Image 1 (cartoon, one colour):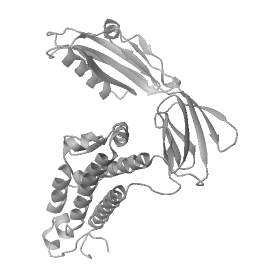
Image 2 (cartoon, one colour; image 1 turned 45 degrees about the horizontal axis):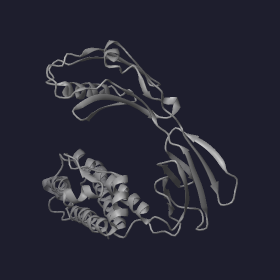
Image 3 (cartoon, one colour; image 1 turned 30 degrees about the vertical axis):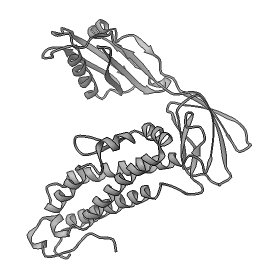
Image 4 (tube, rainbow, N blue to C red; image 1 turned 180 degrees about the vertical axis):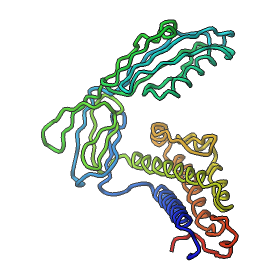
Length: 345
């Protein structure tokens, strides 16, 4: 390796780490996720989910959710989605904690109201205002919705000629903080508020609030929640590895070979969608945790079978990637004789 540059050595190390970490997470998923005796779980998944580890197997948290955090919502008037020749246009100003943002939006070049609203939403989202624009449609009627970050402090205002024409200057729902109480074991009941529905219950222990009510959080319950954590980690690592390969696609044929393997779905896309995993056009994955948990409750054996194929496919891809020689990864002729595979010793 004396003839390798420091950049080449660094790339090979990063490539090796990406493949090993991806394989390890696939293995963990195949083994059923985190089965530690300290792994936390919530008894009532309608109220909250828990992730992380308890300090002691005997620890018990009683979590009562009084109110969920939500963001402010402004909605436009409804309009016929397919109505042609839209003529809306004008100024739209959004004021958030991040600053003041002004847009001039026009329907020019759009074929119908739905296309016009989609165009408006794309331009607003491109402004990175901290407010998310989306188009909702039901029964042939579409409207533009602006949603702020959750919490009372993340309020926003909308003004301008176009905002008034669309009634986007009117607030349909005000943002609010989550309100909840926590009792650890038989200790004092403490009351908290949070801008987010993701809360910390202690070092390494997190809960995601889902509904009003009470649940116990302790060890040894809801293995499906721990499994969801494993799948989420695997999907995140898969996407990170895919980005790494894309960023280095100008190197050797070995990188392109691995990239081609990974952009192919590790299992049937229809099957994956049943458990909340969706393949995007660039080959990356998205994970719908709620869909996964619901399907796990409805048909755990089916979820296990599909997940075995998904994690197994990703594991095989990682193993194949580890077998690419250093020469093929670097793509330089003088390295082609190295025959140095990236493998675990």
